[in-house]
Amino acid sequence: MKIHLWLNGKEISDEISPDMPLLEYVRTKGCYSVKRGCETSNCGLCTVWMNKKPVLSCSVLAARADGKEIVTLEGVQERAAEFGTYLANQGGEQCGFCNPGYIVNIVALLRENPDPTDEEILEYLSGNLCRCTGYQSQLRSIRNFLNSKKEGAPLNLEAGVYGEDIGKEWQDEHKSN
Image (tube, rainbow, N blue to C red; front, side, top):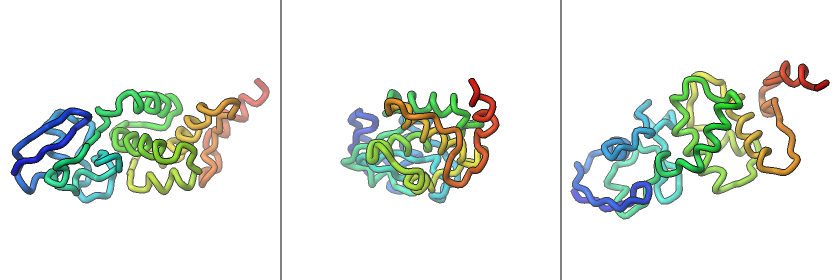
């Protein structure tokens, strides 16, 4: 079957098998940030944008992308690099395996809602699994990233949603400095 789409801004026409998942298709086009994880729509590793909305590419047929704009992490490198660096510097990642899907969703969230509450962030990212961090450092990183964009906003070393002691030792050590 023939499809016609835009992948990261590049127009493509291709012959595909009707049962090919979008995940497999974008990987054949060199978009290796889109990872194969659970293949059951439960982990978020395969998140891409379809017409500017996050979708789990493991559960979407490539045929559904016909006539649509598909964006992967490779297509939002500039926007993603700033937050990805911030995430790493804040200690919000460990192994990094979940980062591409996570960052694609964060960029989408911030495009839709430039000043989300912690609860809105957690809700938006509820489909992204991370087995290393426990989510506290990721939430703290997002909050601090957002605060860094606001003039005079303080760094918050505690996640504030359900983390009691995130960064508390560091904060206590540096109060007098």
